[in-house]
Length: 443
Image (cartoon, rainbow, N blue to C red; front, top):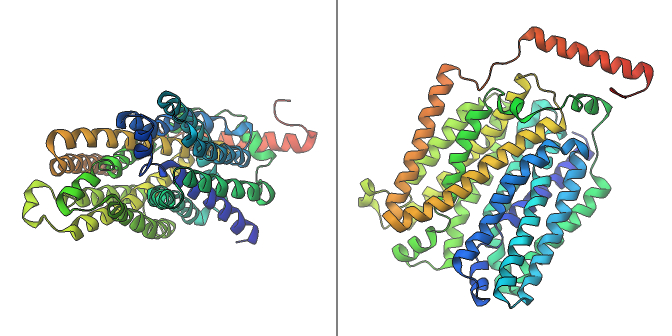
């Protein structure tokens, strides 16, 4: 691997790390700060959740039209928006009017989410180019691990910086560091797009083609449920640990890091196994199975009340879920990348970014549903029975995906070999025509 590829991958990973931090940075301290401004906890929930809704809305748009600017430029523009948005968010502490504070928070969070919707899919598309097809799993797993590290450790970082410097410091640090990475990327990040990519992009890939690719539907299904699992107890773990073990919010933050630690540790391992031939659907089924097992012992669930009262068991359960998520998240993305290729879609930035956009949307949709339904379950049936419900949902996904894998199911029929050969022949003809006449297709 060339030094330039290493530099590219480092910059891409740095952007994803800060994107993850930006996504979860405010959760430990924003509700408390908002209360001092006259903003209710429910309104704070809308502010925190607005990023998921905005990401779901804008990520597919950015993924579909990435060819207008290219993945590199989408990354640069998106990271710049996120950096400036975080810096601006830090100034909200100067606003004392509750309505102005609330609506300004919503507005800036939506702007930040738009930037993340542009930069995150572009990062995955660019990362997959750096190590070649044979090592694509390692590149994507590294990028995904960095985003996961940022997301999982964002609350701890935010809480620590908040204790040191108050409300503004976490946002100014996150925005400032990302701004510096963005400036470095402008100078150093290599643009690998060329005229052949542009020729293929002229075909105009549709969302239906991507969604109908083999394995895409089942990957989105499994990923959404996995995304709901890690957010299921995001708002309820703190009161549970407080009542069961007397932990304060800072100690609860340390418990949350068990997920991030195992997720970060095992994501590269599953990337290595994928490059060695591990089947993506196997990783997906294995991952959701492990997450389901982890949920059984988080409370633990009612049938295991006899072993309750052990903090180490809850910490171990969260760590096990991080292991399962590493397999599911990476496995689902690799299945989708392979599926669009098997469907005969061109290997372009646009297609890769549309795939990663769908992947992000499924994760965010699951995260939003999990945090909402998990809180409702806590209020109605308690923490232990609530995790039993989510564990049952994960078991359901394993049974569905296992049945589909056994039956050889794909979302849509692949193009015939003859059709694919005709398409390749036509592409070669267009490229030869371009080389001969010196003009782009369609001009």
